[in-house]
Image (cartoon, rainbow, N blue to C red; front, side, top):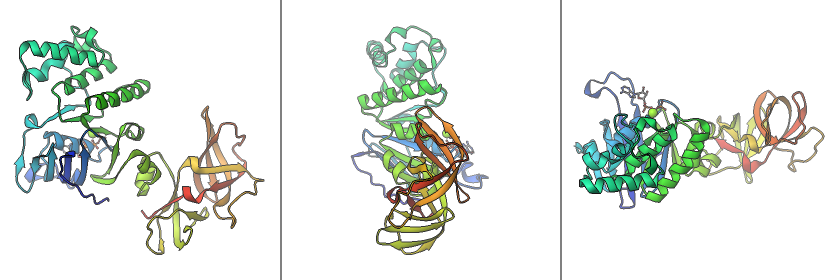
Amino acid sequence: MSDIAVTVTDENSITVQQLRKRYGGAQATEPSYAVDGVSFEVPKGQFITLVGPSGCGKTTTLRCIAGLEQPTEGRITIAGRVVFDGAGRRTVRTEDRPIAMVPQSYGIWPHMTVLENVAFPLRHGRNRKGQHDIRERALAMLDQVGLAAYAERWATQLSGGQQQRLSLARALIAEPEVLLLDEPLSNLDAKLRTRLRIELREFQERFGVTTVYVTHDQSEALALSDTVVLMNEGHVEQVDRPNRIYEQPQSSFAADFIGGANLIPVRSVTMRSDGLLAETDAGTLLCASENQAGPTSGGFVCVRPENVEVSARTSSAGTADGLNEITGKVTASEYLGDRLEFILDVQGVRLKAQTPASMGVRPGDEVTVRIEPSRARYLAS
Ligand SMILES: Nc1ncnc2c1ncn2[C@@H]1O[C@H](COP(=O)(O)OP(=O)(O)OP(=O)(O)O)[C@@H](O)[C@H]1O
Ligand SMILES: [Mg+2]
């Protein structure tokens, strides 16, 4: 579990400090906390994603920021203002928080036209406007999201992608400080999802709105975010930029959830001047070491499939002392157009590997497997 220091400054749009939520209020019958000590901060204008498996507490965290859920403990600030403080017993109502939320179902009103939907926050919200102003602003916003031509249609006559844009337009029209999005793309097909996530990021940058995005899809989190908050069972596992969380996962959970990884169980570990030597069932592996304290045991060597180098058995290439080069057998292979994916059996350990599609290796073949030490990471847990 990461211990993250959070600071409330003008640079941060949101800070969440030691947030805990147990459902059921004072008479709670729930055995554990849905959110259990979550802390993170979101600098102004940034796009941050809460990602993690189903039930890890993403929606609960988002709803606490929105004020739709009363936290059990902790402190939340939005735009420099305390909106919840468990110790100080302070709670700001949802309608008084400078936020807009897009729920998973878009929350579009079917009995209204597209124009009426987008204009709604200007009639009823914190930012009420005069009648003439409302129509003009609503039309301008629809134009920004490419829906001006549909203004007079019923909202139900829009496609899934258009409804998503409408819900975004309605969220942005009242110029919120913070935009909260809960799995807004999950109802769409894969192709549309990819297109709309690019569009979504463009809108977010154009409007400069600080965004908290919830998804259980790790590729969406990597593609969209400035910062990824990886959650697991109510706590924060790691907070990092997308490339760092992929390249330098801090735990086997992070390595496996973000991008998938080979996790080779370790029996014992010794430190060397050039790295960390791990004894595993798949042989002795030299790994990159980072601030690793003394000899230890247990843990895993983490290697991404694209870093498992596979060559035909005759190869004699390798490191000088023969480390990190092992013999294995191909047990399965899958042709994916641009690449081949393999399952290898390396002395009883199952490894996933990837090579260019041109490599002629088949199930049953004996191969040499090499793992570049700088691409192997030792994870203590
Ligand atoms: N209203 C509620 N009453 C009681 N328990 C709840 C309630 N809402 C959520 N929970 C529980 O809190 C935990 C976290 O739920 P939450 O909805 O935050 O998860 P999530 O990460 O958003 O999951 P998903 O990816 O499935 O949407 C779960 O164990 C869930 O069963
Ligand atoms: Mg959820």
